Length: 274
Image (tube, rainbow, N blue to C red; front, side, top):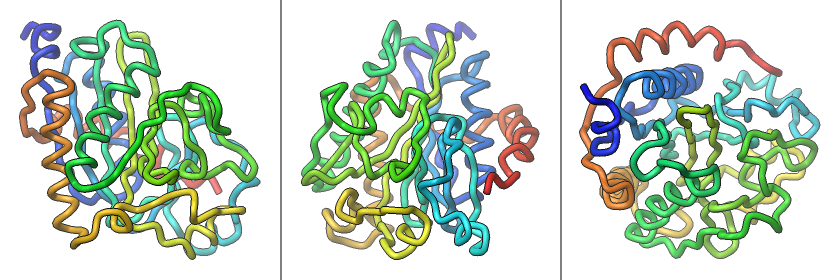
């Protein structure tokens, strides 16, 4: 296979359904490794079997968390392969990842440009769903500016959805989508969370200084059954990624090698960091 030619024309779409927290992270990392070596680039959609907390890979400071509650609750906690700040994932959310080399639409693109391309597809899909969205186009001005490039949050800013960074998506001033990216010389992995529900009480038990007015779930903005909306959103996302990236999208499952690599990576994501 001529990888460079195929990578410019095709992306896989992998819909994994709801999985455990550690496996979700292991599979995303496995896809990123595989894509950078030889595999076709991939867009992955997935969910979470139960509430779980993911931290950015450089997020060492735990001052912004109620650590005792996290430990006592048995909440699964994973450290993402990407950067950024912490996210509480609920079973109803739609999570995405994009694994690609710097080919096709991403050829020669820097961090901000890659964010912008992906945010364009997501914002167009959310707009079709009925959400009134806005994409932040400034690189400065918010307390989280630059965080997604691989830095970590600390103190009261430990929560991803409490701050808005470049190319992130808001509605009515509230953050709708939280994303983080990790880059290598030959490619990148971007992960993102699109929540339908917030669960403010649980957020408040996990995060110190949590402000429920800083973030929104799609169910607050787009009325209708969450399950139907999730399936519709996945379809819209697929269509908009196709249009924005200018590629054909192929429904696929992870390759056998990718599944095996995810199993090898799994133990590292199963160890607790609280």
